[in-house]
Length: 289
Image (cartoon, rainbow, N blue to C red):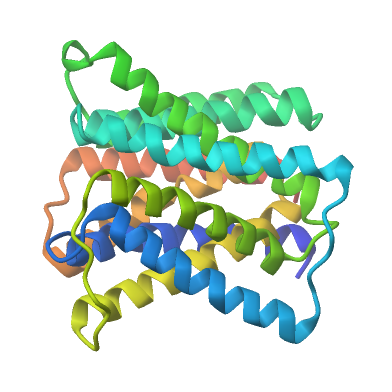
């Protein structure tokens, strides 16, 4: 198996992990407030990863030349969380998702082209347009319902997310995957902890109960997806990788049907088929193969 295939598989598994978050969030939503569950997960992961790094002696001092990429990565992560939170709480979920995925795809194409020397070919552009059409069909909504300000925030969330994972191209050959995700989760812990405190969320003492078990599983999927993402983008271009990650939507739909018997409509099949075709076209024509 060549490195490109390994990268593709890693990103598909990462997309699957992301697809489980809807199911896990549904289980947690009635038990934990949003930012409380986030900072408890991130704290656990930060401690766990720190112990692993100490045991392996794998921490590497961050050089001045790379410091900016870490600041960009952390800042993009903050913007991703804050903007999508505001969007979800002020406009329809479908519109928020459409804006976020649109921002991610367009962001991946723009960043890959401007900063990483990736070419936007006619076929890649065709894949992008059809994938956005597929997303729109799945999250179909009346454009009149769009609140411009919060829709822009959803777009910004997606663009920031693309910026976040694109920075791994600049860092993954210098620092271990564990160190990168450790810094991500440590920064995420401080942000989520601060927001949880400011919003006066309810804090619950950890216990051996189902909600805490689900939160633990959520943590494991978070660290797994983070490591897979970094590994995958070592071998796959940002533009093609952004298309692959779009399969998260399809994994989420399948899991929603399996766990909650959520309806799968003709629009879902049509939109999903268009997305899969766009991803396949992007992979088939990519020079990353």
